[in-house]
Image 1 (cartoon, rainbow, N blue to C red):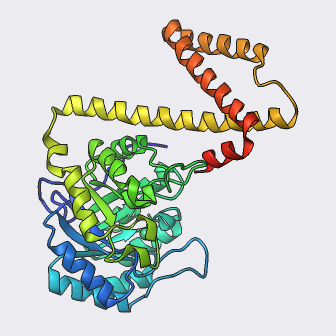
Image 2 (tube, rainbow, N blue to C red; image 1 turned 135 degrees about the horizontal axis):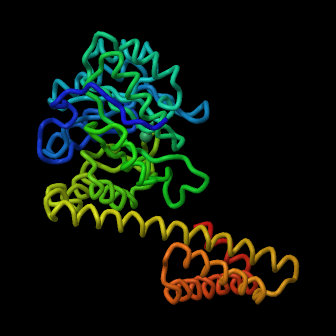
Image 3 (cartoon, rainbow, N blue to C red; image 1 turned 30 degrees about the vertical axis):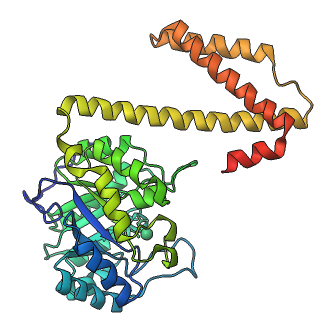
Length: 371
Ligand code: PEP
Ligand code: MN
């Protein structure tokens, strides 16, 4: 089943704030202290591109024993942030108690985290707790790349009467997420958009990237694919953050990032059709690079096998078979033979180079591929 969902939604969402520019949600991964919250929020307030302040109060951690959030006291700090800065506030909720507390403390917007969206029982519990309210809710994609679960969460909330909804794309756990923390699988943006038309879609580059230095590329790509906003983890002192330290930026780091991204021109620079086509090319090129990266890794492992078993690097029978098979497959889908031969000659040459390196210096080759 993958039918388009008939969601009943508001015309003007609080999340998008009615402005022409993408919404920016910023704030720490976790609320840690009142001081940390207020210092971060005061800096963010100076940046007019930021309209919503986020902070995790209850943290869903993969393993027990890690920092699991400060709990209810964090909602008091969030209330102070709201009173002092006027920023809208948002927290993650995962059960009835979280919903009740967040509503009691006047949080403006809720979000459902990736580890909760995977579980229809939890999503239904949240939806039931929200019945009768009209608070906006953002739904992160599930950890696993299952679009139906994502859509199902929207539907459960909508059936409970929540009409101000948004999606947050935060990447997926896949067999190889490199170089990201969570694989963006950019094509899912198109897929969820067509299944849930009209629902705003924001991107959370922090949890996709997992590292500060990748935030720009990921955010840029999301905006090119038409994301309606970004959620970026921002901490007054990321190096001492109690969770997700390596992916958080300072408020001034966020300022620089948003300036480089040039939110305004991303939206208006090119006629829509050309921009769409270029986005598609960007996406495909990134997929191509990912595939080449994975292929190079497999080549290296084959090199290690050949070395351990005293086999020659170049095996002409295998190469002949491979190229004939690839040329036939290319012909079947109408790709030019010369073009495909040239590409595979280059790939094969590169692969032999990797294996030569494994033979010459196995320790170096292993280290390089692990970086
Ligand atoms: C978070 O936003 O801090 C968080 C836990 O995110 P996710 O649910 O995307 O892992
Ligand atoms: Mn986080």
